[in-house]
Image (cartoon, rainbow, N blue to C red):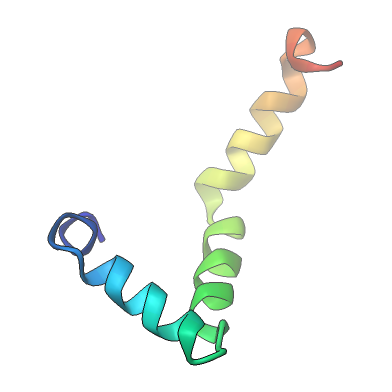
Amino acid sequence: MLGEIQDGTFASEFIQEFKAGGKAKFLASRNMEANHPLNKVGDELREMMSWLKK
């Protein structure tokens, strides 16, 4: 993923997809990241940090 960001592939595909009116790849990627175990652990840790709550 980092290589695609650095060489511009990610941005190019992202722009092409949105110009074509589609968001399937973007939404699938977003869903996959939201359900990643690291994200879930981060959510649990942030819940324990009372100073972050407003």
